[in-house]
Amino acid sequence: MIGTKAKELNKELETLISRLKGARPIEYDHGKIDYLYSVTEKAFEAKDLVNLITERLRALEQIHEDSTTIAESFEAVEVRQSELEAQLAVEANIVSETKELMVKSVKAIQETLHTLTA
Image (cartoon, rainbow, N blue to C red; front, side):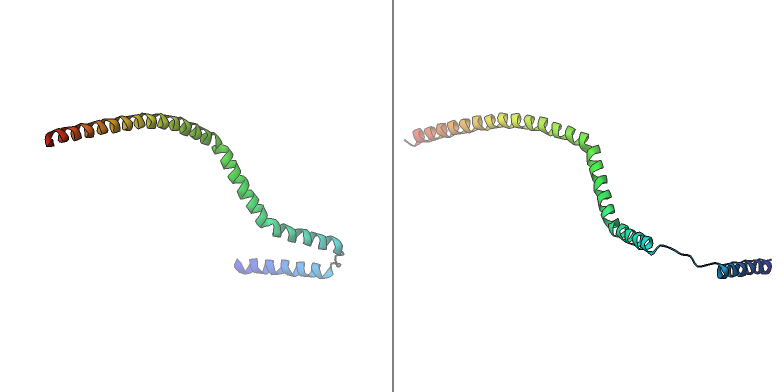
């Protein structure tokens, strides 16, 4: 079976070789081939740039898709910042009041010590 298949393939090969030997030479336009070759070379040279541009476009697409989430995050940060500023103002008042109470307490202690030592 393998032997007959090999014989058939050899016969086909011999037929093709004889047909190729009998074929006339192909006439072609060298200018067109040179142009095609230069265009192909330029395409291969541009491949890396095309990949870079494609990556950047994908990154821009991702940024565009994430932009709504980013906008919501910025809004949340602004709200939180306002809350923090209000809380800091309250805490600043508490610190000021505590400072005043400490100054009064120290003065009272000093007066008490002064009266005890006098």
